[in-house]
Amino acid sequence: MSDTATEAPEAPAQVPLVDYLVLGDSPHLVANECTGCGARYFDRRNACAKCFGTEFTKVDLPTEGTVETYTIVAFAAPGIPVPFVSAVVDLGGTPVRGNVVNVEPTPENVPLGLPVRLTTFPIGTDDNGTEAISFGFEPTTGAN
Ligand SMILES: [Zn+2]
Figure: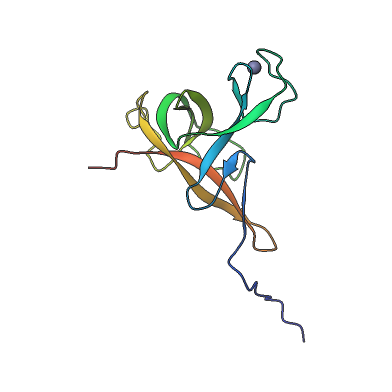
């Protein structure tokens, strides 16, 4: 007889959905900043699009910012709950694309300039029990 429920001895491992999300005690985002002109990128670059510099340094971004622009998405791929708020959030001058979560997805609840903070949440677990962690932004001002 084989026991199909093999238990991992340790807490479930977590992996960020994107490599610019850093987990741990204080989750935050990191950007690659061009040392030549200060332009910031989230994807890996061989050269800066603005000054063609090839030196980059990692910078931690603040976890709080404001909603710069957004779209309420009403239609998405099967399995993705709609509507949701797809936004660009200004984190200390760096625009970051992400969803606004923990809010009713209506224009009244998501005014431009809304103060938000980074939040992380599991979006799934693989066969080995490793949790995939994604991020979004929630309003810093609680209800009431
Ligand atoms: Zn540059």
